[in-house]
Image (cartoon, rainbow over all chains, first blue to last red):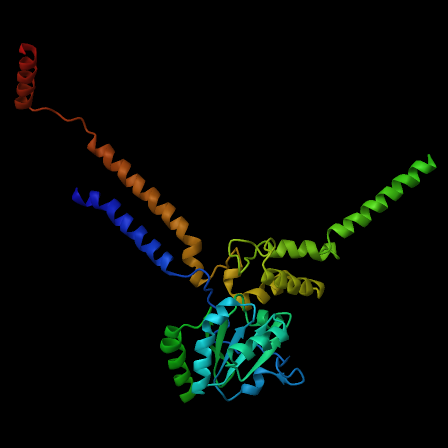
Length: 176
Length: 154
């Protein structure tokens, strides 16, 4: 008899649990189907030296980071100091993908705020971004020695994400 | 009569010209129609409650441009779907495919429905059993009578 009165309470608890889980997840973080797959190939001119080109194939044998950024992207400024610090450690090469930006604006920003990138590739029409499943700048991909995407950070890199996810993963991938 | 006909024809031409100007996107109405049919069932990644067909986000416009190109190349709907899913996952589809990770999503509502009906049946059957008319014992009859008498006297 007493159990019957507990039923609504149990249902309520279950509902609350579902809602709590739902609220703690970010609906803007769409898991990428590209993680675990070979990085999509491209061949783009470099922002600073349009005569030279960059292709992910040239990074084979090395663990590297591809950071999608743009001068018009405010969230990118949030992670910029962290990228600057990261580039000083020389842990792995950091390549920029300058997404739907004006090269002049991009260069101006790098001159003012500092350039953490080894180089930035110029994705003027955003086609490469689409191939990489980019839907919100900034995004960062970690690619292993075989050219396979191992991790995708959606939104600005936080100190926590760098310390707890990205750096340990880099260390692991560098060893293998 | 002839004049009137020419006038009507000219009017039609004028309408055609203005129609073309009003819809700069639809340079090929067949492509556009297929684009709308396909992208209506896809989610815009930026404004997630909008369809790819209706969103004005930059990315949606870029994606429509890509899809338009695929349509012009004569790709099938399935190939276009694969193009989107391989980049953004099943999340872009408003009708997710039936596979192990989405079983709960598809079957869940039916499980809830069936269990709710079962609970209702059990409840109704339980009540039917309970409703057997309560017989009063002689002792209780006596007590009831006494109470009623008390009421009359007061």
